[in-house]
Image 1 (cartoon, rainbow over the protein chains, first blue to last red):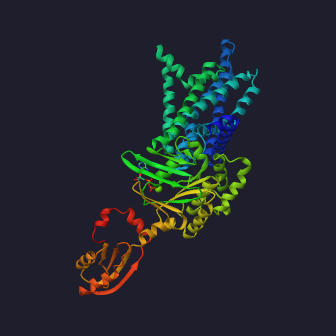
Image 2 (image 1 turned 90 degrees about the vertical axis):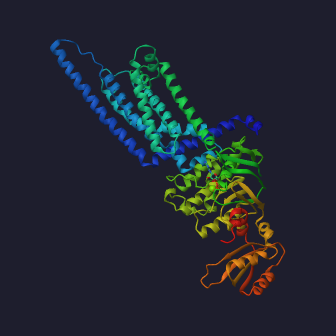
Image 3 (image 1 turned 135 degrees about the vertical axis):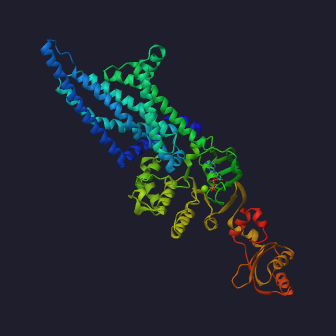
Length: 277
Length: 319
Ligand SMILES: Nc1ncnc2c1ncn2[C@@H]1O[C@H](COP(=O)(O)OP(=O)(O)O)[C@@H](O)[C@H]1O
Ligand SMILES: [Mg+2]
């Protein structure tokens, strides 16, 4: 049998693709048959649109105020409105993520365990990695689908701005949300794999996110600790992206974060076999 | 096709499966019979690679269930104790999903899904959401899931639980029809199940194998022994003592609380010995009145009880 698999590497890769896709497809369909997905997406888009308008009008008012001040005191207005709106809006998106990601990931594994369907998956010829990747990428895809409508708000603002800001800013910002979202989804999936109760999974995921956010405050500390926390902060790298800064160290940071938690989830699913001992 | 050798599984201090060994030949239906908590589910979970054994080995189609788990999983269909279904999927989508994760190629999938629906008689529910199905239908969806990819080995944990009598008969027919092409292990705590469907029976109790044989042999093994039912008017204790004194008599049980004041007793005789005349003689010479004396052959049920009941309950003089 070993010889057979060795002589047919393509077959093996094809098989992996099939199994991975089977899980991915199932997860996507699950999302769209459950009312939760629609409620979450609807609420997300509503809040995003609402806050976008508030931010936009706030920034415009602020600008008008400054313009008036400048008339009185004779200082030229030097504000980059689109950049301000972007930073505020992406800041808002990261806050919404705090609430949305736990809902997207809570049931990923805990529900499978509770329903007994994990027994089907674990006794089928698919690997733990295929299961975990299928589920992770499905949750990431759903998240990306949620984001697409928000893109239109910013594009609308960009084309109405004078001069039109560099599109690089938009690309970097969205790369940042997707990477931040991916990291939180990976962490949430891992937590879901630890329990049979999806409510507990959601609460612990939320608590873990709060911890990450709180940790971020510590980066202002002086000395070595501040520097370490600053590098470890999920938020700092995100802020770089929303300023249009894409540096390799941030990319490596998120890639490592996602890889680490996907890997831990694979280990956790694998250990379910052993925990029964 | 399936070889199990000294399989042992301990959950902490509880030994759920204790040095179990048996084999299943290709095309055979093996019944795994035992009361609740006997270790049936645990054994099946080890065979399907769901969890590892503490010690011992099990091979399916020559592959070790632990070391070559993926090869084993490729060849089995498994119905766990609770059907592993997704409530929000339709029956058809669910079976399609299962076929996909069992690596069924795309071009074969629709045909196999239809076959599974047909065999388990749930074609009329193919577009229904699983959560809207009754317990019996869910169980049949679980069964369809176990055979959708046409596996060599089918492992069924209590496949008729939750079905009504008519459905039970259908499922038994289905299982019988699957044998030959497929090797089947099914577990049950219901006796008629094994006598009706299985080629061979493994009786398991408290993790240990109590007997392995064909249902016919198990029955005839003790058939030569005899069970006699007696109804008489007599004082309880003297009757029990008198019956116990008959050479070859064992398991004397006397039930007293009968409305008509009669005592009814059962006595088992040793193999090949008819003790009826001795019983009649004893009762009459003691001056009691004999109302009835009949011989009952031991059913599989009795054998099952015999093998799985504690010695403690046997030692009790009457029940
Ligand atoms: N996950 C587990 N942890 C601890 N003990 C268990 C577990 N599963 C089963 N057992 C114990 O192992 C024994 C056998 O259980 P099981 O295999 O489910 O029996 P059956 O299927 O024949 O009813 C029982 O005493 C049960 O309590
Ligand atoms: Mg059981």
